[in-house]
Image (cartoon, rainbow, N blue to C red; front, side, top):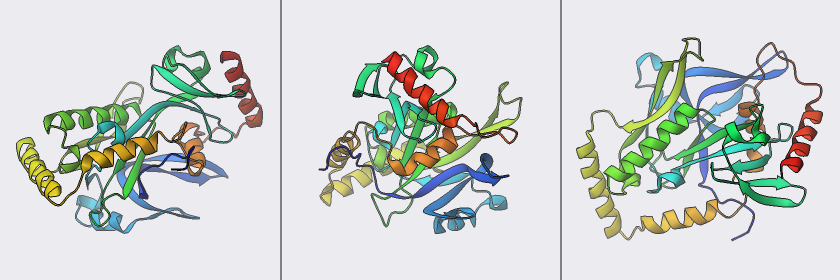
Length: 292
């Protein structure tokens, strides 16, 4: 296996609850109250919708896609949801420091070094909101490609915390048969003082409509037994995935650079592109060197 390249699940498309639009020459995030499923192809108007988007939307109320039936491809919750504290160079979108709240991998002039990770609130390098949680949920939507995934990317605490909890609970309740459970992504909204009482949408993971937990576990056991009889080895799939994720220091690949900048460092409609963006990038590098 080639070293230095993270081997991640094959991506067939993306799942989002918003999009990036251009206004007056600026790329601005625009939130939505529904899911959108896109392909990996981008046009001048944005990401091209995947055929599954129209199929699922056709059976929804008011054409609003607020739940998506999904299947996990791994039993290990941490393989399905990849989440870390991440600090990126805002000029290039490349990772500078990635940690889990205990330790971090940090890029310095001496190479990649390991340091303690006290979380963004207590880290001097993370001041100013540069370091955020970054989550990537890999789910399967199309049984014709068992290992193909659609990726939901988020920097939202609500989505990451909820998805992590649900995956852990369902894994425990099913005796580790997470990949066999009939699940769905569900869009939820809530209001907070920080949102000025306006609804904030986040992603939850639930059992599919009309299925109780006991029925879901029964189905999972049947699917697991049938798979084993056919010679399918889920434990080996999880093992290979774990090795693939760990094959590189930073899991983020160069194709995500532009997405990272749009997601991590959005400009509001009244702001200007910083004239000193290169200076900001250099300042970040100098701060890394001082902290390291």
